Length: 413
Image (cartoon, rainbow, N blue to C red; front, top):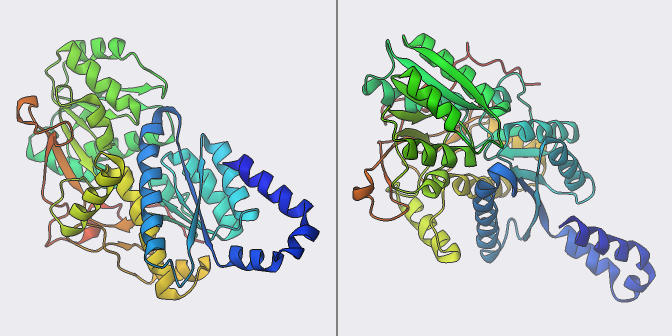
């Protein structure tokens, strides 16, 4: 996308006189009347399959907003880029802000790239809403005034799934064998899961770091077979989860499986005969609310498949940003940050509204635990799990699954 933009701008700069003759001021006014939003997310690599859902959902959200008249009478223009890696994500974020004059940046899945984008956003005082990076560190010691998180943090995933594992008797006095993605997200998730186990009377028999480009899990599966753990824990990410599930099934291992990081698209890719275990999820396509049903129907009509949780994140991030712009009658990042910090409420297709917690800018909202169905019970290639009721329960604070004040190192500037 960058090449067409560069070419267009060279034409504008080089042909000012000619454009003036045909209404250059009108062109400038037209550009000023558009609200530009930058969208960065991985579209290649091991997170690429999730990024594809993110892009589709972002397009859908902007299309709906523009069809309804835009935001405060102005149409939205979505500038989309593949974030690729942390360094590239930082460069593209800076270009979007400095050159393209975006009002905000939305997206990302990699926690490492979220960090570099947030540094640019903080320096330029530009709103950044993280839709897929999970690490507690982004909400902790690396928190930023201009970064907000619709995606749940690792602690929320661990505490949500942990409730189910404790109910199944798989925590206290048990030994876990964990596989962890060897990058920022995985390291953070391993730290959080060890904290959970220590607090609840369990331990790890082994924890193994797995390179993000690993495709062959057979050596690790042999170690698991010999270790005979009470539970195998996945702290993997992206395509790693799909590859692990397929190979675990092929090996015929019978140890229970659970995961603390999860996207439903990765289960779909594994298929109903290979998907197994207990997993936490921020949202899924079978939630029984009118808003979820409409979103699923509209997305499926557009793209021929249901949305998964990354699609939910990017779609809702754009919609709530537009809502905040309407409520504040402004696109100014400082005003939007103030609005979020005052406790603005947002419908998120669940049973309760959510809000950004002022202390660390984490969205407080419900989560779910899903349990894989036996292949014979799966209705189709998408409805391959059963879901828990919302977590926390209706009589609990939304904040009980988030980091506590003692666990959180955020010192907001």
